[in-house]
Image 1 (cartoon, rainbow, N blue to C red):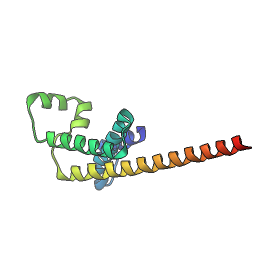
Image 2: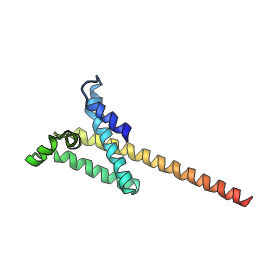
Image 3: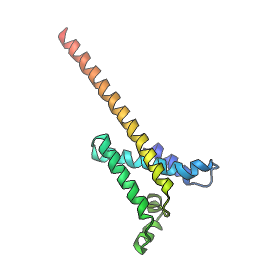
Image 4: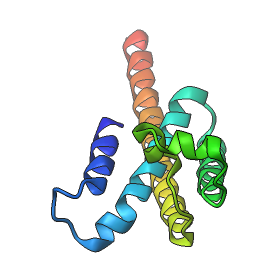
Length: 132
């Protein structure tokens, strides 16, 4: 998660010369992955549930950028909230969020499958040793 956070912050810093596609989309893509993994750690729900929760959450944040009440603008004036809430609605952000969450959920499912297989192998070895 720290790596995702750092890569996302780098995509927003103008001191580094990066390709325009990276500057435009990578931050949103990585932010969505970070949201997915945060919900995965907090909720411990099945991957599909976390995927849905993450999509809804990121889409709501993006849609909130269509509204500019004073209290929300005040929150956006704080740097941390500005990173989270953003300022301007873009349809392309929804695509970046979707792709980031899908990748994160694929990685999560692969890791879970590998962990279950490793656990099953360890249990099988334990059974074999106890039968000797």
